[in-house]
Image (cartoon, rainbow, N blue to C red; front, top):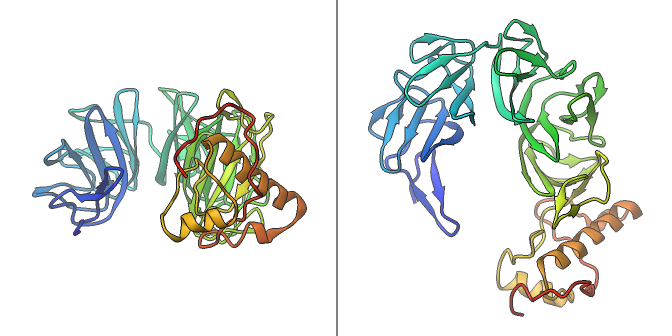
Length: 342
């Protein structure tokens, strides 16, 4: 299937946005029922569109005259679309790397003196990050939070660019190319709790470029090959302490630690078979039998915890491309119905 820089996944198959976009797309966000795309392009569909465009379900549309530089991030905030990037004009209006689209027009905001690469939220407030030293004229090292009127720094920020962020469990996790956050040694990933920065173990050995959260797991992608000293090829999974799963604290406490987990297993952490054939047969050969999502997840995490605590890296493998061994089937502690037939 041909797909020009953008495609749609419906849960089973990919489909294109014909005729697509003529160059790179770096950001996607929704506002109402419309999809917005930002990047480094000049055409979306049959329309001229300078670095940002709107998809209404059938056609691409420009947002006035767009931006005069690349758009790297988009996020919906309080009923408007916030765009961040390397631009200094939005719809012909002067701005500084960040602007607000209200559905009809571009509006200025206090801006940054360097590129905005990531946008997100913390405690309901807008957060911008990237490679800058001031935000709205206020000193802010690569990351800042907006109270609706002014930008404020998050402590002393980071010593290098921030490329991704996600809020999880009442904390803000950020990734990038930095090696310290708030003066604390933090290799490419760190967490802000609203007052202070903390490291996540020994971090990654190269840049973190993407973060996503699905309670209670933090997914990390980037250029790295190790996560907290464990082999992990370009992608890692961490269980976030203090997040709720099935109505309880998922890690049994409120600490800041993440427990890193190798990802390549025939079964994903929610218990669904990733493939048929050899993956199903391999699971059965190891004595793994379907019972319920939460029980399978408990067995999976038990093996990983045992491997981490006991120093048995063989169970963890080198990350993507390696299977993770399972312990023999554990008895279910709840009256769970089978998740699927054997």
